[in-house]
Amino acid sequence: MKQKIEKKYRPSILSRDPYKRRSEAEMIRIVKEVNSGIIAKRAACEKYGVNRNTLALFIRRYSVRTLGGDLSTQLLANMNENQKMNLLERKVKELTKILDDAKLKNASLETMIQIAEEDLHIKIRKKRGTKQSKE
Image (cartoon, rainbow, N blue to C red; front, side, top):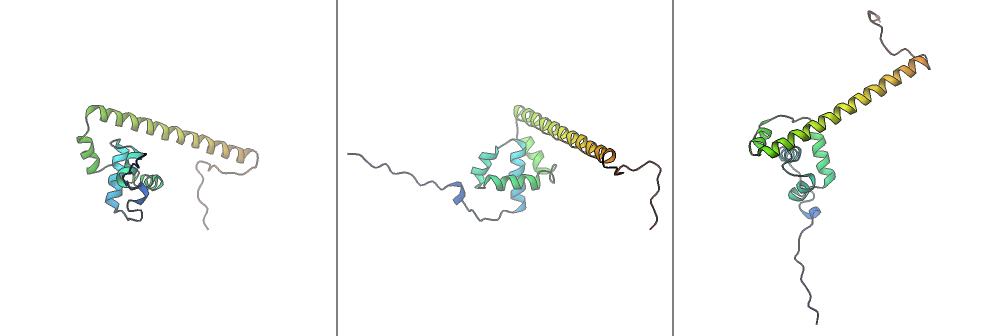
């Protein structure tokens, strides 16, 4: 005879307080943990019961605004040397990528201005020494 194996009920990620409003401090703490490398995005989603898109929204909203602060220094104090090196390497890669994207955007905008001035005869660049008109 086959015995039925009872499965333990394990709530899914989505059933853990799906409509719970999180305080701003809690959102910032989650983002800092993810950005510092203490916890991965997937693990943060499971730990805090947050959808991955919601976590991405938190990261977009709070990672630029809260670059420094007391919590980041506390997190760094709890890390060992290997974790700190990994964090610094990750930040260098991230900043290098941002710089490359900015250079690419700048080059594309310069090209668009050049094409507009040459082909479409639209004057975009301001000449040096010109004064504003009085209206």
